Picture 1 (tube, rainbow, N blue to C red):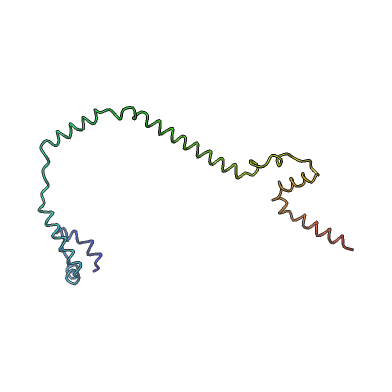
Picture 2 (cartoon, rainbow, N blue to C red):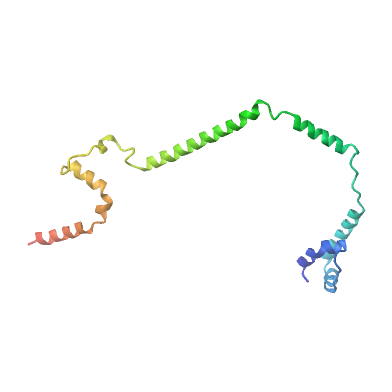
Length: 162
C-alpha cells in the first residue's frame, strides 16, 4: 500500500472510526514517516477528546439581543445614505458615456474619410487629371484585382511592334 492511500485513511484510523487492516498495519510498521504521522494524529485526537468548550456568560444572549435592537434602531447613515446611490449611478453613467465616446472616436479615426482634408472631399470633373486620380484612389481595390487591364497592355504591346 502506498503512503498517499495511508494518509487518506489516517484521520479515520486515528479517531478509531475504521479498523486497521493487515495491509495498513504492514505499511505502518515498514514506513517510519507514516507511523510517526499516525501517532501524532492519535495524540491530537486524544487532546481534542479531553478538551471542554467554555460556557458562554449567562448574560450573553440578553446583551446580544439588546445590541441588535440598538443597531436596528440607529438611522441608516444620515444624509450620505440617500446621496450615495445616486452619486454611484451618476458616476457609472459618466463612465459609460466616456467609454462610448472613446469607441466612436476610434471608429471615426479608422475611417479615412472622416478626417480627410477638405480639398479631397471636393469632387473634380471626370476626365481631368485630378478626377481620374480621385477615381483611381476611390476604386483602388477594384482596379488592383482587374486582370483585364493587364491583358489589354499585353495586346497593345504586341500590336504596336511591327
